[in-house]
Length: 202
Image (cartoon, rainbow, N blue to C red; front, side, top):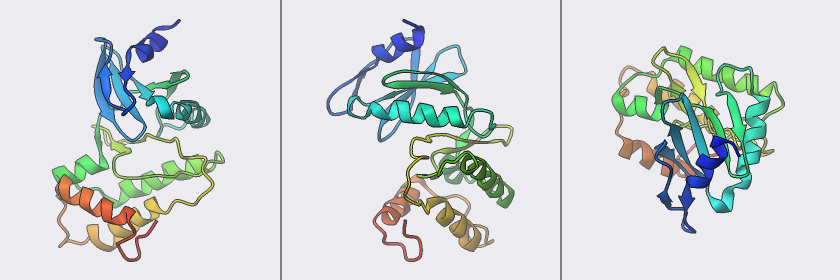
């Protein structure tokens, strides 16, 4: 049994998908709709441990990351198991965090994200569920993309196209505020998911 397997087994998640406990060698750095993410202390790697009822996603995401190996915009996959994957820890801030801090998202950065997604498409994937929280800008200004579990779905996802459209039509204008609170961004996101923003429906 390798250390990664032991780390994954140390993560206790209850039936309500609440985190109960984990090994002291791990540091919680994130959580979402399907998993908790921990940095493995003294390393540049994270282990993503999936909720018990969603652990099947581990294999799917691991296979997709394997297909993306060699493309610098995506993390390296180091290991995977029944309910976990191990990838690079990426230093930086998400697009969501940058907007809340007032760090401008530039047109060249949007173009580079487009390139990263097109490279995934060239591998036969269908980049989906692209949003402000799974695109990271590193301290060096590099673009990194995480959370690729839905890249093999057949349904067309328009989210990134809508983000680009909003960036072009509104965000880039001199009058548009470059700093927006997390509360406002989450509110816009909820309206979008409900299809209540005209011309920006997924």
